[in-house]
Length: 451
Image 1 (tube, rainbow, N blue to C red):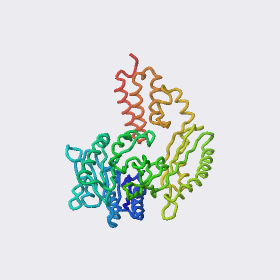
Image 2 (cartoon, rainbow, N blue to C red):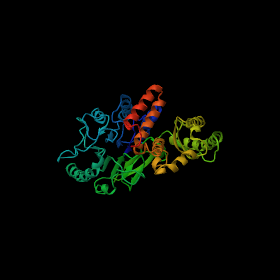
Image 3 (cartoon, helix red, strand yellow):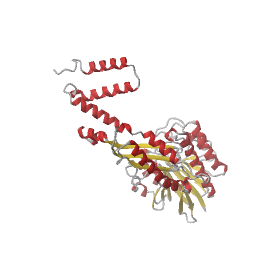
Image 4 (cartoon, rainbow, N blue to C red):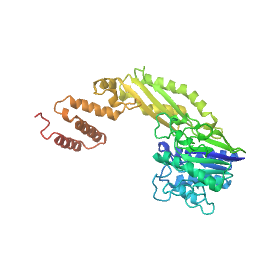
């Protein structure tokens, strides 16, 4: 019986929040998954794209990838891989790092040749691998690859069915067939666009036993033949709520493939939401905020105690997503977000506190009532105040109230924003005054008087 590991989206080299620790997390989740897969006595591994996070791979990311892949190599477990959208440009010019790893024998890079009318897939040559292959047969399992193809994914899937039938006629029927691809199926993540319809895959059901997907970071499946394992690490708080990990599959004696999902080891994320309403002073708010964080610590510890979040039996420090909302009862200038972040960091020992400020103040509410377009003018789709838009709207509103500036309110607003920026950058007063005069002359050659 043949067994394999299906995983994807390691994003090695992702220095999230510009933190070395998060870059190391990406590598450790990759390395740990590999070791756990080997503990399952797998015969090969299938990685469905986005090995790297950046198209321009630096030396550290390449070293981390090779160190992980060497674990497979030393255990005589071949790794089959396809290109993801983060791994290479859609239109490449030079040798990619995946092609480099293929040529060194660290991976078997599978991709179709859709440039001409000839064969889409050429068989992998273990003696002379070149820079990529079309398909490979491992322990009776024939594996094909579809590299990231963007908008051309659907049309390429239509071509693949006939090509697999041709190869089966030429080489004989395998015990089982796997198609690896880096694309998403629509409907699995609310608000996500660009996925293909599941109907585009149905035509392959007669010639493919298992579709090994990557790209979307969320685990999902269709029936008993289309599987997406999710990424190995969470890249935001929403992803942290998903079952991320990898599949262990077994090919039965009759050629069917049965799989089980495993959760990957990763750093815990936790969200704290706090409403600023009901506090009449900064001191009251701080007391309420501290009490709220104390309440959340117990729930956070429950998350940290989950097996896939622990490291050698010890809790790992979390990433905390701090979301502030509600109507502030005192001046917005008094609220110190940094102070709130320090409280969270001290009480939770978080490696990173990521703030999101959707609060409004009474002052803001009064301004919103006066602005043309109201809330839609200064709030984004998630209901969060865009302070740059607010500033621009206020300056335009003030300009519109003066007949001399009304017709050029947008230009006046741009000027005031520029002057403010200069003042905050400690420009000499004389320089700022001269810039104001220059801008005024350009906007109002007649001195700003009504004609």
